[in-house]
Amino acid sequence: MPVERDGRGGEEDRRLVRGFLRLRDETSFSALYSRHAGVLFALASRLSGSASDGEDLLQDVWVRAAEGLPAFRWESSLRTWLCGILLRRWREVCRQRGRRLRLETGEFEDEPEARTRALEPGAFLDLESALRGLPDGYREVLVLHDVNGYTHAEIAALLEIEEGTSKSQLARGRRRLREALGAAPKREKA
Image (cartoon, rainbow, N blue to C red; front, top):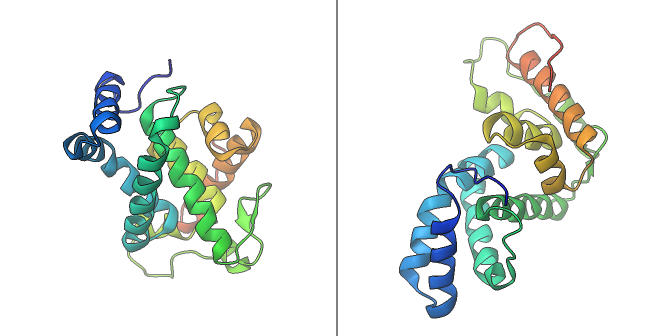
């Protein structure tokens, strides 16, 4: 069984899920929410570039999770499964907005300005702003790997891409982030 990202093991999640599924116990669901909502919200906000969109994504994830829990097979940690739901929902939102992701570059085809977005000269150095300026594909991999600690194999499974694509998007994302923050580009090891 995969290692839980929260470091506390999956037994508590299993107990809470059983309680929710058997009795539709609101207390169990609230406890699940409390255990995972912070990480999911941070990921959703960073992917979408705004707290408001992050909140909307978070709500969608929990609605879908409540519907999908009876079919969850525990082949991954509950948190990984929830992050997968979030990533799929994020991509749906992007498609609904008419944006198509090019996996080889991590950029959206209809958004050429994403390639050149950066902090304006003299702007306050802000990592969150720099992250928002990254093409979405780069941002997804960078946040999952560098912020949330997922491996390239896990990212590949979550995003349904090759492990090599995850590594190249991370390297390109890091380079763009350094450029946006005004640092000289250098090679990073993934």
